[in-house]
Length: 411
Image (cartoon, rainbow, N blue to C red; front, side, top):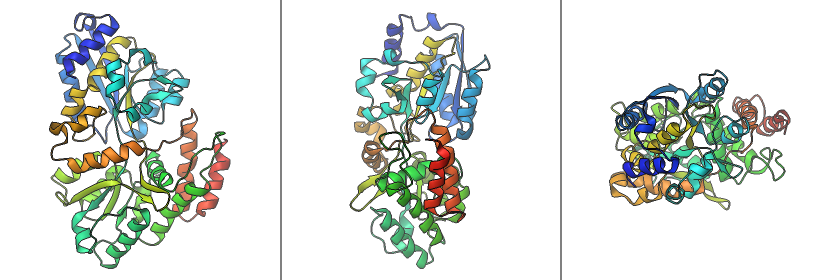
């Protein structure tokens, strides 16, 4: 699918002519300032779009992920909100319930529906409706330092979380690094992403069939116990409790960790950054599983692009969304985020030189475990973040911390 065909198809669907209908249109779009597509990439994509749409301007705003949701909600009531919004997979329920995003179900063309990876659509769906296009297709992978594993006499990266702990103990005992594993466990959504990965591996659930908390037993409890145990044993970097994803990348790139859990974007940066001391030594595989329970683990960390319900230019905003999410645009900027389009994974121009990443993605993206789909997700996430921190700090046992989270959740 070419960019020209994508835009023409969108214009026909809307009964518009691509350039005349969009003349003298000013759009505002909200993005995040870290991970996945870089700010420079988003600006380059936008420049290409406006160059092909004379009279259309797009003002871009970038905020840290941690401020993205609040910025979106505050802007809706300001009367001067955004037209295009980047949103996390955990927000469609809340955004749909509160009329923040436009329902675009009828705007999705048959070509989009069949061409996009089936699992990617869950990023933008709620109760059978679609509220945008998937854009950043992502999960957390296990990155490892080949050089450190080789020096430790380890032939292959771990396939289970127990093997990861065992290998880390060998690496620590040999004095290769003080803390072999680094995570993003700061009291933010980042720690929930790591916890979800482990919960999925241990066969846990966030909520039961009745929507009641189920994370305080079974796999949910085992996941938090693993986090605490590897910290107590000196295998997980204790500073992980304060780290976000960029902190993890810096520690790993500095050669101070043998293993790291992080998003796709770290593959390119750790291998190519001028500041990376591990370039050429980085391996990537799906996150491990648990013997007898799971082969691998993965969580859905994808994000979508949608049209704000309050946009004064919904047709033009949707056209901009379809351009940014088109196959040609995604293929051209596939270094920091893998495409949502199924056929891109057979395109050597996209996968060439990154075969290891795409092999890991082909397995992991098919096994992505969701965080709860509920309008009250933010409240649930907040109480879980507190519980995890209390357990990691030794303030409460994993069992007591999760029991308190169940009580505080109000579910």
